[in-house]
Length: 263
Image (cartoon, rainbow, N blue to C red; front, side):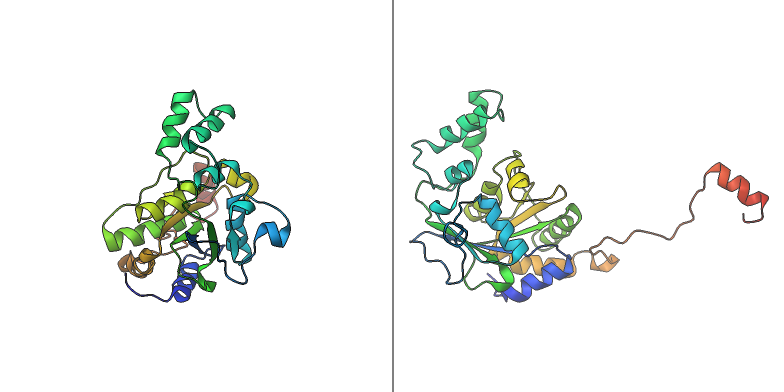
């Protein structure tokens, strides 16, 4: 992995893409729950349990460092996916929930979907640390970036410029925290994700927002790609509209223009 200054890389990406929110660093704790001193634990700092995606919004919007363990998370499907439950068959429990709330046509289809989702085994991790990449005090496992489709386009261009590989991602419209948090960590490759329904309800994720998540080892490549991809033809964000043309006017405009000496 190419060494890179995390703060400088995060600031460059945020400014180059004019992101509305901070890129987020993610660390999975597998040996105890040793959170940074300034990490806010919702169950302690707020006296509340929250949805995991709310923690991400706090980080990317407020600039907080947030620590999450089992006792901080109230979102049932996320708790199942991240191994924070006592379910003997997590896939089956999640499938039953999907069926109960009408997200699957039948039990077999529900089980088929949940079996394909990325998950941690029960107890595989003890906690999650989330922080803005540019303020991080730990070595992250993954980085997640929220942006609009045009900003995601630039990140896709950056990735393909350096690797020659097109971005992949799966979407089911719900519990997408598994795809942008667990999948990049497990698969060690970037994932492009459309946030799900619950995240839009509880974490204020906007209609135009998408997510790119990738292992921290990919950060240097993303920076290099953003600097170079499309440089020869001036590609950047915001996309600059082409203006070197003469518009075709409506017939009524043309007629009047000729009558009064404009055209």
